[in-house]
Length: 502
Image (cartoon, rainbow, N blue to C red; front, side, top):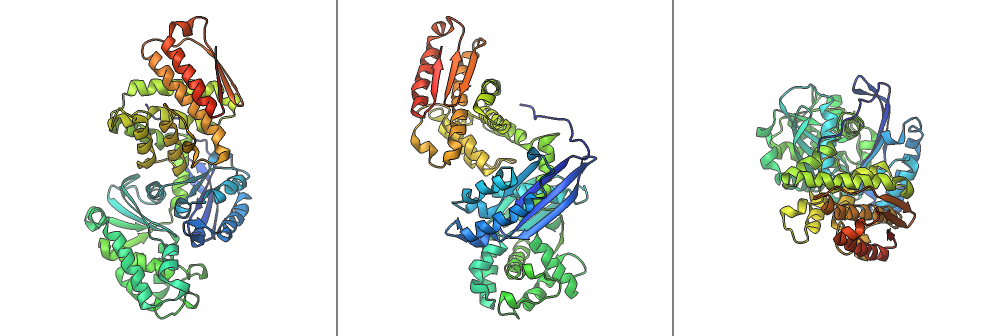
């Protein structure tokens, strides 16, 4: 399947990105000018959503802080079309079992869905944001982003990331776990440093200095470190190990986070700077970094550039699905046949079932990848397809998109029982049942279309029902298809959807 291309966004178009980080929330509104983005408004607030994580659950206080911040951000989004806003959640929302307690009201406030992304997708977006701020040269670079709950590392050249990694270490999570009560001591600092170095050691083989020509830091943490080094005269620009050592020694003079007083350090960074320096020092020592320069480009800029691609020249998700199909040896003509039928059924039901354009995209992409599980085993291939869609690194896709594609793949055939809804919010169930119905019907019709053209038939969707009207005599001439449709009637009826065939 060729990537979908559209006309470039016209100059003056407004786009917006909201980065729901574990430490801070960021908003950027940008205008498209000559194929590039120019920031119009930039806002940031320290929310520390990650500090409200207890037993992988966001506290009510953390949720309230985050929603209050988004209510202020929302005032800046009134001039931006909903389809041109993307909201991205990172580590705190990735690990929170109750993330929907935040994402649902957040979506209502912002008027756009909240895409919680996996760590490597976050890393890809970070690299995209950084790459657009640097010279377009051919030398390889290591990009590091120390966030509140995770640290992303990317090796790439120009605009293409080659290796992506996300480590479970961040300045907020380490501040809480390694410096209890905000107390600073040599033992606490050494604990944070050793813990970070152990985490980094697992990826050292592919990320040490022999694999890249320059190192670039992206994040408020690394920019804060550089600002202190410059203010204190410990650096002429960027970050090096000697400067970090001087900063470490000076931080250890203070007994508590609240007491930290260093020129160049903002009060908002006092609670996370010790953990941030420990993580940065561990990265320098374990990966052999001599010098790091910092970049203003970050996740939020990467989201804007990715959104520009989705809306104009190329959606990276199309390329990802094509690569997935090639990797698992998919029968491309049959996959495209399935996708076309799924799209036809979607177009016929979209209005009556109040489905969204994004639902059609999700359905079509799942249809293209519905048989990738065949590479593992023909028996129960739908389960293998679902597993791969859920667990593979799929650039461009959010965590929820992967979960929903996996659900559609798993339910394309066979029985449907209540266990499949266990992780699905009640509000999403009707929409997903309709998409499941469409992919199951597309599969039934695929086997007919392999041999002959399907006749034109009428599709009539209603709230909890779907009526299919075939030309007179066609079902009698295709008894196997008629039997399969009758079986579908029974399966879907148990889920509350009436399928009528005539």
